[in-house]
Length: 358
Image: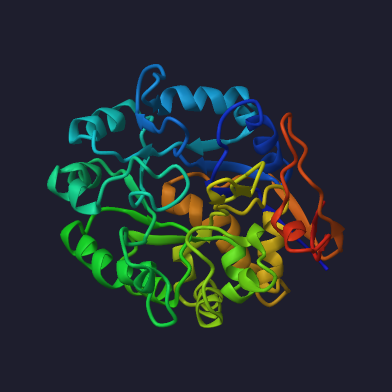
């Protein structure tokens, strides 16, 4: 069984920084990415649009040049969001929009994930006029939809969690206050978030990762499979099923691929476990496995992987084509100049996957 698709866009990925960027970008080119949305939580953060990098911040302009030199110039298109910090101003948004370099901004809940120490509470961006400036200038809000600063029992529980709270309490107010603001709900994990996205306007869409379609918290805890540790955490079977149903529903145009692929040389560190799953080189294959790709759902899969994301961001669909074949293939360690990067399936004890790219 084989299927042909347009080259696709990974609209949530981490290319990090340094010499190994070239290996990470090549991994995406190898899995037929036409482009990507490269997240700005570098050290220091990409919290300015124009100019040169400094010790305190990097800029979209400079980081784009880094990506280009590391092989990203082979992409048809790529986006670098602005990291929203306490220093972000409406004037910065307006200037960035006029320059053409600013297409989206990333909201990180303070301390909510890797290198999210610079974020501020959502109310800050409402009060300072930043979100209104984004809405006025057609800048997309990439949102990590979890409430920050919660107690453990509220952060992750059988009947409630940080993402549930955010989509029940924060997002409805945000959408009501800024009805014209385009929002990409990043790496959603819950039935609550999936339902919210489906029931709101066309300005609201969502990315979904391979790991949240394939696994549950049981997979994370059974044998302490720390390679599956990511933020937001994988949830329960009810949530996984809701995500799968959402991308095959009548509102399937609102969901698209964003792997959140995050390379870590050392998953286990002195401060605990690094959050992030690496799915470079193998993401379309994993999505096909989760989707149970077949003749009956090929069109739905193509929309999710290749069409919906570019449409949301106003990017032209690639004219290049690649082929997915249902043929078992080996999962390989990614070699870099520093240390090896372990892809998620290998970390989960799976040396082979069910699909391959021709």
